[in-house]
Length: 89
Image (cartoon, rainbow, N blue to C red; front, side, top):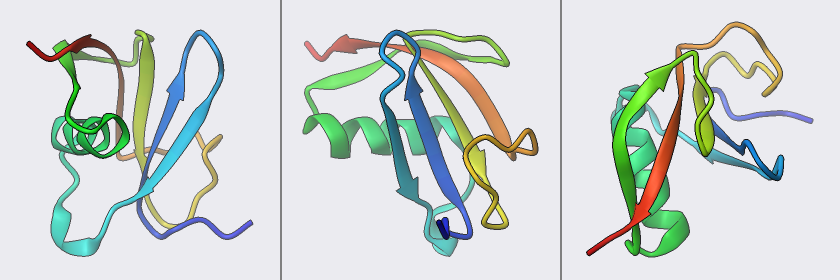
């Protein structure tokens, strides 16, 4: 399978469900910004990031930015960390 050149890979740590969202060149590679964008796109703005991203630790979800068409199981990542979500008030 051919992966996008640059993408956000998110996995639900409980279920193993995975999502891949391509990162366009003009979007930037800030992990927190990309996660917030994914939450908005995936959950229609009803779910928000709860707290900070925990580098190299699991949370409810684990996100990583992968570049150079590498597969999701690559150990070479731009940035990665676990995070939790909450329902927006």
